[in-house]
Length: 116
Length: 114
Image 1 (tube, rainbow over the protein chains, first blue to last red):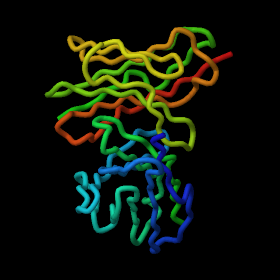
Image 2 (cartoon, chains in turn brown, yellow; image 1 turned 60 degrees about the vertical axis):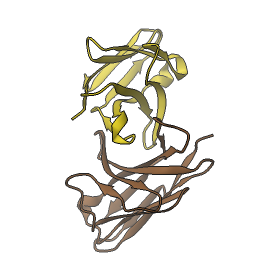
Image 3 (tube, rainbow over the protein chains, first blue to last red; image 1 turned 90 degrees about the vertical axis):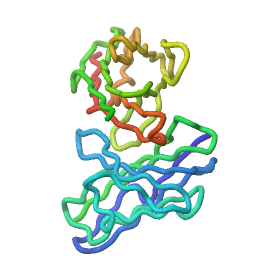
């Protein structure tokens, strides 16, 4: 149980285009989803917290107009990187917290974004 | 604000040897502490967690960690390393009033030599 999927697992896009990454909780309802960014050989940096049906809360320094987050249902959150640039290339990981799980987050497998 | 420090970005042990990965935290409220493992190009898998109660917590794959409030530590151990334990390990802290937001340490890469 407690499986989180991400799609796509990897994506290459051209500079200036937008790309959408999906995060789904497959066997539980997620009241809260988190989006992280990870550079090679580095730790995870929280980008934003999204709650179903409400606006995402972004961490300091994260451009909310560039990284659009939509948590439309209890099983789906999306991250859209708008007008992507090479410096946006990174590993993006989502996690989900269930209604029942007070403390635990379940992580997706990550999405590798390369902007050329 | 809470923070996590992992001592040693890289630890190398021989197969069968003790694994010790160090984690110290800073938190203004009772912390919830986690250890995660990450294999290359994959997401994170929870090894174990401490929330309340017994300070020695056992996790998957033979790992355990002990919460020591006086030392603000939550070190991860495993008595005998296996080749399959080679991975990146992250310690994280979550404050209960932060809605589950996790703050991660820098990570420790564990290598296991045959």
